[in-house]
Amino acid sequence: MYTLANPGAGQKSVELMRALVYHGPGKKSVDEHAMPKISSPSDAIVKMVKTTICGTDLHILKGDVATCEPGRILGHEGIGIVHEVGSAVAAFKTGDRVLVSCISACGTCEYCRRGIYSHCTTGGWILGNEIDGTQAEYVRTPHADTSLYKIPAGVDAEALVMLSDIFPTSFECGVLNGKVQPGNTVAIVGSGPIGLAALLTAQFYSPARIIMIDSDANRLAVAKKLGATDTIDNTDGKAAEKLMKLTDGRGVDTAIEAVGVPATFVLCEDIVAPGGMIANIGVHGEKVDLHLERLWSQNIAITTRLVDTAATPMLLRTVVSGKVDPKQLITHHFTFEHIMDAYETFGNAARTKALKVIIEF
Ligand SMILES: NC(=O)c1ccc[n+]([C@@H]2O[C@H](COP(=O)([O-])OP(=O)(O)OC[C@H]3O[C@@H](n4cnc5c(N)ncnc54)[C@H](O)[C@@H]3O)[C@@H](O)[C@H]2O)c1
Ligand SMILES: [Zn+2]
Ligand SMILES: [Zn+2]
Image (tube, rainbow, N blue to C red; front, side):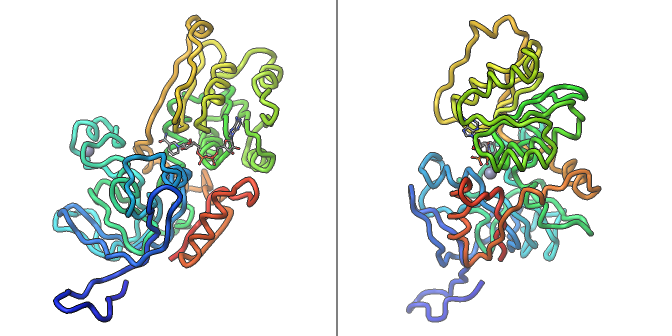
C-alpha cells in the first residue's frame, strides 16, 4: 500500500495497491488500484500473503464468465493477515493469519442454513468474479466471520492455499457426491489439480482401485506417485475400452468427471458399473449427451455441485494431522512482480508441467 504522492487540486490523497486486473477477454494487467475499504460491518480487509491461479481465472480471461466484468481484480484463493475488520466481525481481529475461502457465506440465509454456501443469497462465488479478488495486495472479504478460517499454529501455511478452492471442490463434488467407499473402484477422468486433489482425498476412504485418466503423460506419472493404482492415457480416445478391459468388463463404482467437456462426461457414462455414481465436478460450457437409452436400467445416480466449502474445517484438520499433504500439487513459485509470468506458466501446463503455482507478496 502507498499513497498517491501528488493528488490533483481538490483531490483527496488515495491509497493505492498493486493488483491483477481483468480488462475484458484476453486482456489483463498489473495496475495501481485503489485500496479496498470496509463497506459493510461484516467485512474484513485481508493483506494477502500468498495466492494462486485457478483454471477458472483462465475461463474468465477467455470471456466465458459473464458475471465477471472488465475492471475486476481476479483471484479467489489464498492466505493472508487480517488488516482491518468491520464493527460486526467477532471471530477475527487485526493480525490474525487467515485462509480465504473461495465461497463467501452469510451463514444465516436459507441456503447457508442448509450448508449450501455456494448459493448464499448475498455471497457464493463472488470473489474475483462479482467483487474484487485475491490477486492483489489487499482484498475485502464479505461475511468475514463465516468465510475466513484461522490458520492453525504449526501448519505449513502455503499448503493451505490449496484449501481455498481445489481441495473442498474435489472432495465435496467428487469424493463425497461420488460416495467413494472402502474396497470400491473409482475412476477419475482428468488429472489436473482438481482430479489430483480428488485422488488424494478419495484415499480417506480406502477404495481398492483408483484409476486416473488423462491425455497428459506427465500428469498421469504424478497421479501414480500420489496413489493411483492404475493410469489410462486417453490420447487415442479409447479410455473406455481400456478401462473395461482393466476391470474385466465390470466398470467402476464411482466415475468422477474432472475436465468439463462433453467427451469426458460421456466417458463417465460409458464406464460406470450398475449401481454406480457419476459425480460431475467439471464446469461445462456446452450441452452433453445423456444416454438414458442405455443407463435407465443401470441403477446409477448422477450428481452435480458447485463447491460449498462446507468441508473446509475437516480438510484443515487432515492437513494439520498430516493425513494429506496438499503441497504435493504446488509446482512453481513466483513473486507478485512476476504474476504475468505465473499466468503464462499456468496457462501452458502441458509444456511447463505446472499444477498449482504460488504467488507471494
Ligand atoms: N464444480 C466446481 O465447483 C468447480 C470448482 C473448481 C473447478 N471446477 C472445474 O473442474 C475442472 C477441472 O479443473 P482443473 O483445474 O483440474 O483443470 P485442468 O484443465 O488443469 O485439468 C483438466 C485435465 O483434463 C485433461 N483432459 C482434457 N481433455 C481430456 C480428455 N478428452 N480425456 C482425458 N483427459 C482430458 C487435461 O489434459 C487436463 O490434465 C474444470 O472444468 C474446472 O472449471 C469446478
Ligand atoms: Zn477456482
Ligand atoms: Zn447465506
